[in-house]
Image (cartoon, rainbow, N blue to C red; front, side):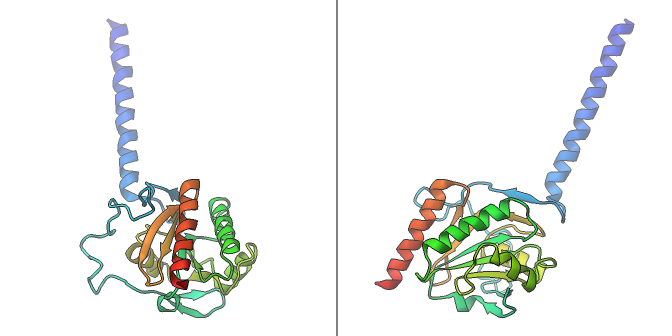
Length: 226
């Protein structure tokens, strides 16, 4: 009888610990990543097999639809040169948007190496690359200048942008449909057409999607040339 009682206590203790762990895990999923926690998410490709926008992608906050005047439709950020760059200045050519931070030890380096590949592939062909920092307190124009040099970033073709973190969160969520926070971003490249409209989202670690991105850029360049 005493043995059965001991077993029951052990089982109950195990159940209690399991419930506590589950509660902590659920609470963490609600709160999301901490402000200093480095997190990367894919969460689906964001594009269909043909590279078009997936119907699963929705506005981050449905209470503020894109046509609402409270919803950002343009942006202004500081480039590593110290110059203010407006989204209107990017119109007339396709461009690829990404989010990163300079102190990231691995993923961001690989991501920018992919952008370096694209820059070399499309050098002088009328496409730009816009890399936006999600750690602007650290990534000053001076820091970004040194960081960009590591990848041989052409200042005319590959822009490194910084600004206010709260504003960058809005730019990411409201314009480019990317959840961003301090040192938090996705592994997606956002391809924007010459009219400033999002064409698609591409997970750069996925080889077929990265190849599809290249094909779409070529199509846009040919369309502008014809």
